[in-house]
Image 1 (cartoon, rainbow, N blue to C red):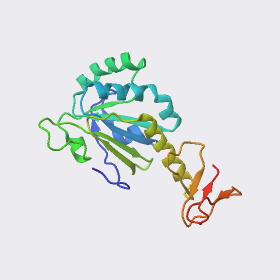
Image 2: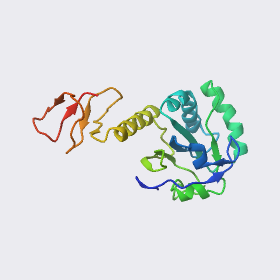
Image 3: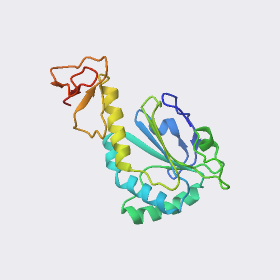
Length: 205
């Protein structure tokens, strides 16, 4: 699987939105590459339904989702109808068909040790330069937490714009931040030292 800081490779592939050039699709946006084990499976259906419901949240953060599996585009197009029934809304992002597993293999999304070729529940968050900023990998048995993925994106985007801070455990947008060790805090923000030591400094957002 790709490591943090690596450039996500470009690819051209068929999708539910037609032939898709990945870099062209992303443009200058952030990217969320989201793989699922198979179409017409219960957990995957709930995940993509939730993503469809959260489309405005991704738009607000300038994030473009794209889903990949080793299913055909024909199956994707039929499955999208099921997802719409579950979610109550149209799926606005592309589902890429990777029937030969070429894309999935290149980025480390195929599950080893199984009889059937299956794409793991992978998540890549990419910055506008196509660099991998975060990687999450779940087993096929466990559905992902979409609120956590949004929280992760919020943290990544904030810390890119503010290199002087990092986000603490369970941080949510609007919570207090931590000053990055060795960094100077910008502005006149109040700094708290709960441990009495400089290495842990909280600062208001």
